[in-house]
Amino acid sequence: MPRPKLISTCMSGAVTLLDYLKKTLLSDFGSFFKWLLLSLIAGGSIGLAGTAFHLAVSWGEGMREAHWWLPLLLPLGGLAIAFLYGKCGMERDPGTDMVLFSVRSRETVSWKTAPLIFTTTVITHLLGGSAGREGAALQLGGSLGQTLGRLFRLDIKDMHIITLCGMSAGFAALFGTPIAAAIFAMEVVSVGVMYYAALVPCVVAAVTASQISAAFGIAPTTFFLAAEAVPALSPFTAAQVAGLAVLCALVSILVCLSFHKISLLYRKYLPNPYLRAVTGGVLVILLALAVGSRDYLGAGMPVIQQAIGGQARPEAFLLKLLFTAVTLGAGFKGGEIVPSFFIGATFGCVAAGLLGLPPEFAAAIGLICVFCGVTNCPLTSFVLSMELFGGQAPLLFLLAAAVSYMLSGYYGLYSKQKILYSKTKPVFIDREAE
Image 1 (cartoon, one colour):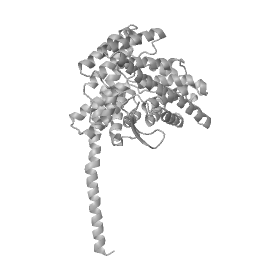
Image 2: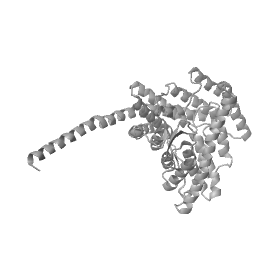
Image 3: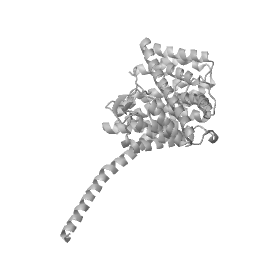
Image 4: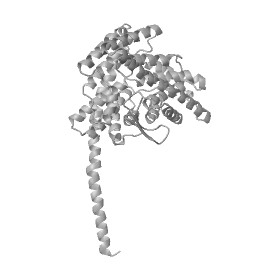
């Protein structure tokens, strides 16, 4: 090549490279630093709110345990919750569904959601409603995330990302599982498509929030699974775990159908939200008296611990399902994920004898499988198993999550969750969870 032409080619290449670097520095690096700052702000502020929420709910649970008569006030608590939502013009509050829907639409989550869900979830736990906390954390985080987005005047696309940031931060502050929190926010909205544009923001927000909760002395949620209770990987063990995952997938379908159907029955026969709340509170009290146990009030974390220790009553998973469906269907607030932990762990512990698995390990597998079935989030389920149980038997947990996901159908806790691809074929189906 002649020397002048070579010099011209090199100069042209250099100019092209400089243009590329300039565009990259101005766009990609600009976006990186923008979201680093925004996610730190979101993680910090929502981490503080989530920490306060965790402490408030723990206080409520402690008060309930110390004063046996508090659950008798559950109908009055239901009236208070119905009044608060009615006063704020949110009688038909869609809950977590609204947060999920807002991520893929132009709809927004009201700033009122954050204080409402905070207060009403504490009321539910103080008075013994059978509910979790994570649904409230997702709503709290999503609402505060969008409030920050409006404050910073973000456009609609960026509002979607900061909503995911808020969800991650709220989940991480409450459970202390930042990896699962970040992945869950990106995976739960549209099954089959991960929102990778939110990867850095969600990770930074989740880590920040979990560090803040840890700084206030809140320990991450973990369960002790004895090493001797974890079987070695073998074809036979894999078959046992897959069999348990099949059963748990069926249980997850039962959970979703029960929650949705009981909620519809409430609304059909008790359209008045005040009457619905009082009736639900009375039913929970009567159920507790009939069972003769307080184990099914609140989130039920002690029972989950016992199941992973190898002890669970055969009927426990069905009773928790009933208590939770009656509580949430009546309009009490909280979440469904911790109850699904309870249902999965107790069912797995009891089913262990049928499959020849150690009951402790089967309880852990059951917890992850039912969670996976009701959320349709296999990657989150696998990562959550590593954070909750210390990274033991990763291949068996991954197999369990995969089987449960495939066989749990198109049911889910959140009716606004989109399932974009078939679970059995590479086919685009674009349907909402049932």
